[in-house]
Length: 233
Image (cartoon, rainbow, N blue to C red; front, side):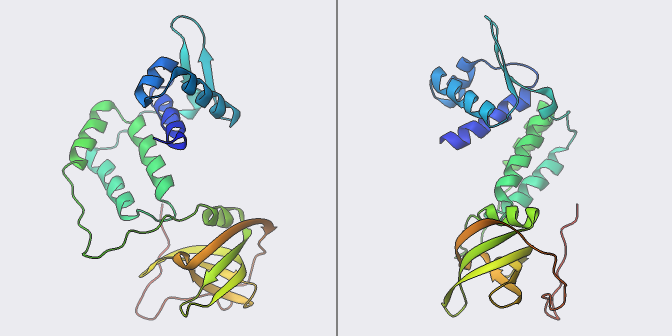
């Protein structure tokens, strides 16, 4: 386990048992590192703003502030596995990592009996990929950040003819289509809305330039035999 994964795992473990404590030794044994390494990890998390506090003394340890924990969630095993299946189908998509993080929080907040039943059911479900199916590439989170914060992106792009170009774009939406994920954005080079395949982006740089609100005139539409649907929550 690399350090980034270990830091995440420590936070989720403390979240799951909050407000109870875990000692540095318990965390070290669980993650196969030294007590000193755990202490450095905790210090790094605290410096990053994670509200972990230490209770010193013989029975002391580390705990996550109660406000960061979730109340018990009464998801059924089938509901939890449905979420896991949706994530499995989205593997490599722009919300893959965030989805796995969310599922981990759901499992941590479930009663142990329900979580165990969900894990048992998940172990009996199989996914079959079509022959020759390619693994979806990981999508940099910078694109999601640009959309959420309405910031301009600079991208190095390779079009369908293999022609490379540098673009400054104003992202508006993510689109899932036949060949993977796309970004709909106002292209300052072409002075209009364009659709960019994410797997053709060679470089990505988030700027601090705000993206202005654009008229939807000329906004890309779905082909006549297809439908574009928004994600519903």
